Length: 278
Ligand SMILES: [Zn+2]
Ligand SMILES: [Zn+2]
Ligand SMILES: [Zn+2]
Ligand SMILES: [Zn+2]
Ligand SMILES: [Zn+2]
Image (tube, rainbow, N blue to C red; front, side, top):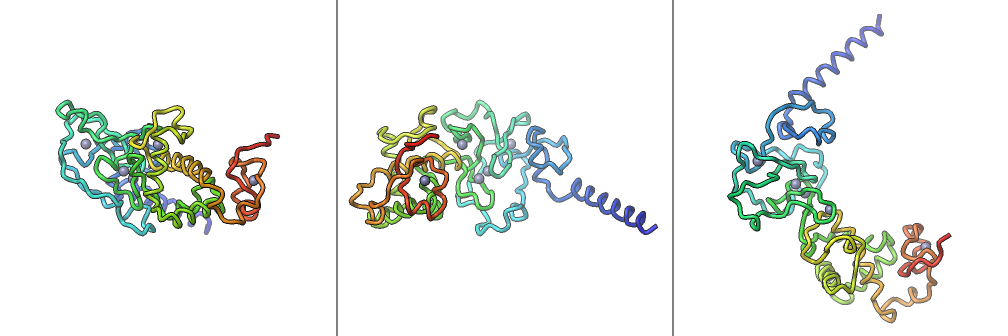
């Protein structure tokens, strides 16, 4: 008897939960194309047209209630480019920013000269991001799409920049401090070497990659790490701490998976190529 009461109460609860999801205040999530449905797995699909910031009748969603409430910055760091300079026609196709999942125009109507359309796609992974278009508003977004020269280097990035090896990353960081180079100066030094083809990256082998290539944060970070490794490798030995020069090379070199362990990282040099393969 008790059991069936509980069952009944439980099913009441689940009904009301479902109702609140269906009619909840998440208006910003409506009209997402079905291919993106998995991001909103709990929401039933609705056939409401997508409305972006350039659509007539657009209403600003409340970002402060979304999942990143823990983040220190309530909004992205970019300036807010809200003045609409384009109006979506009724049949406008939209695409979702893969950072904030807000829609933006995909194919622009012919009145806009092609060269004035801001980049919306990463040149490496081809994913769409809204940051250059109008400033991404996802909480904590530092810039999900940027020219490589404007890649947002975080202070915390430097601690793990070289192969997640804290020791080699610290050597680099100390060197930058000693040379009075800011993290932006450092990025630009690396990019000069990329442009002059002294430094290369894996993605650079398969794509045209220069300092002005537009990259998403993830692809920018991956390529910056590769450039930083080469910069670190090129620091003259006599400018490194004594303790560094006494270490022998790890067999697995830069590919070593144990270098994330501080003890191993401090005992062996990992700024070298792999010499053992079995
Ligand atoms: Zn629109
Ligand atoms: Zn990318
Ligand atoms: Zn965005
Ligand atoms: Zn973003
Ligand atoms: Zn090792």
